Image 1 (cartoon, rainbow, N blue to C red):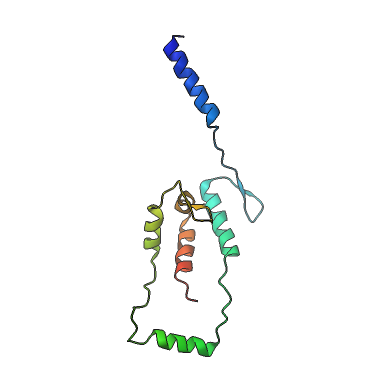
Image 2: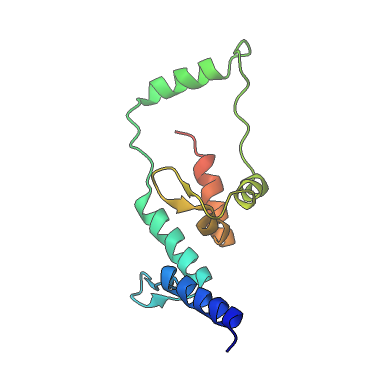
Length: 132
């Protein structure tokens, strides 16, 4: 083997040693089977999130809620009520996320959000549009 090819071959071997291949581990689903494909993993994640994420308990009295709604619905408010998000808007934002960066402390990456099924996008849209 000529010296130039030996250097190239050694360089490729060193590169493999420095960066071992990453493997994707399966995730256990609720029925105790394994989710192996990205779609199955995303669906298992959506089911897990829907079981884990619950709204905070409402500590407001019904009379207070009525009064708050009256004040918020008055015509002399400085700001208009916040427009609800559509599923297409949420999907557009997710498509523009950087797939390689973790978002804040929850470590949910853009890649994970991009692999969510339609049900996951629908769930996120409903979560963002929840009122108290």
